[in-house]
Image (tube, rainbow, N blue to C red; front, side):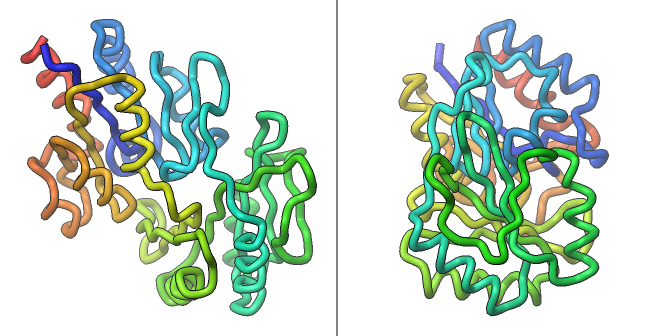
Length: 280
């Protein structure tokens, strides 16, 4: 029997429009895992943001977070892999955000715990965004005047910038032109219309590269990937088979092997259940 790794994005793909897993998805995925299916996720979210949404899934293999910058062992509660950012790039990013009056949220590991470091909140929109997310990181928030190299013991690995396309796309251009080992990946928000997340991380990694790392460790025969947004494109292209829910961005649908029912109709778990048991 072919050994298949099934790997899915979260928002807009596995999560419903409420940004949580449906009871059907939880039950189906746990049954699949119990039956021996190799299932994991690859998301732009970090662990504090993902955990409330996936805590009921009984993962048996590592999960991929922050667009591939992190591989986390769910069983051992351990960061198995981290793509740390170069201190020169962190300093340069801080200068770019300062110049462009843009708030960035840098995430760093210290003693297996995530800290959020941010520069000033420049607008009412920035203040509203921060207020909504602050409770996740209470006690683990640092507020320097400007993003810069971390103190000893901190390992920065990811920065997120949120706002309109007019706000974040020029920042993306500056990152690509001024930094050494960083890239910025746009991800259209599925919850706030006309807004984007600009995810900034080490240029050597992507969802696709870390999925391949996991696949090599598992010695699988094929990778089947599911996604809906711009940051899923590389993994969908690299997978042996790829699928998107019907609610995916039109540009993404052009690159997949099939279109599934929407995330609100549990299209991904329905497909995996049928596909796995067809080949079992």
